[in-house]
Amino acid sequence: MSTYTDLHFPKGFLWGCATAAHQVEGNNTNNNWWQWEQEGGHIKGGDVSGIACDHYNRFDSDFALAQELGHNAHRLSVEWSRIEPEEGRWDMKEVDHYRQVMESLHRHGLTPMVTLHHFTNPLWFERRGGWLNPQAPELLARYAGFIARELGDLVPFWLTINEPMMVAIAGYLMGVHPPQHKDMNEAMLVARHLLLAHVRMYQAIKEATTHGPQVGIVLSMSYFQPKDPDSPGDRAMCELADAVENQYFLTGLSEGVFPPPVGQGEEATDAKGTWDLIGLNYYHRLLISEDFLARGAPYGEPPPGAELSSMGWEVYPEGIYQIIKRLTQYSPPIYITENGFPTDDDSARCRYVLRHLWQMHRAISEGADVRGYMHWSFTDNFEWAEGWEPRLGMIAMEPGTLDRRPLPSAYLFRDIARANAVTAAQLQQYLG
Ligand code: FCB
Image (cartoon, rainbow, N blue to C red; front, top):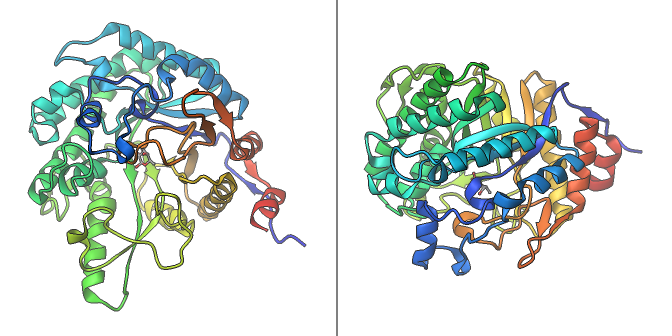
């Protein structure tokens, strides 16, 4: 006898997948990642993004497929280096391209959630010092205001920056993303600029639009625990990792300050309340030990014997519940903007999705205001420094052919999205 019950989600819940321009569009030749890929030696297997999923040309059929697969929303990013290929010059052909992309989303019944900065920088911005440049917030705001003015009528959700602390940590502290620096002071300075950039982008979008869009940020949050709960060193470093990756933006935007260790609580002008929603990217739990700063990336580890993804991430569904609960102390509604599982075994992906939706539902049933779930990702795509090997798509993309082949998880997700519910029968079938 099954002990499961059906899990119903709130009316109007958004169901879809998340993507990022550089990982799927193809030929984003004018940004820092493309350049880094060409240098060689940085990406696993010597991979490059290249034509990626050719989504730049195939967006319309991709969205038709998403619609067939029951989605009612889609998270994507627009590529800054296409829109502003040289400083201060707007490429209206690209603006028109993204207008067609947004129109196609609407035609296919998909609510757009649009990220403005998802890891990549135009080369001109990088040459001007990238995120170290004190003018970075203004440069980002000018771009955000421009594109929001151009596309504002079609975009109800704007997400300013994807995983800002990953930009600081991976690019400037761990040195695993471009510009590959390993400098704590730089990382802290970049974190300040990222917070200010978000604030200025938020304001610029609000000024540029009349349709009252929801504007927020996308935070990556890991569920951190000390490796040895009895070790004061492990506990202290765990708190530090949490303060940097998880708490900095939450305190920054709720209180309008630069919290430690980035600042000393001094005011971050106008930052307070610059979020209409919180985008949460949740993937895994990490155990933190005393030596975490010296370890480099990854800076934590899974417990022994844990179920792991093909990228070594622990499957820890309880973490999404804990983090959502933590976010309920802030007023904005929560959208899961990423959650996913690199694996060659799609049945493991099905279980992963169900177990995370179950925990998300548990938080909702206790009062959390969660309004959407965007699975990472739609098709397999270019996984940054990990190259093409990790398979994160619910739709397998055949190497060489670019053909899209929906996996069983895509049909499971379709049934969930259409019903706005996970059924007891699905839980029974996949979780036993
Ligand atoms: C997140 C990134 C996203 C993707 C997933 C797997 O950190 O935002 O682009 O690479 O991880």
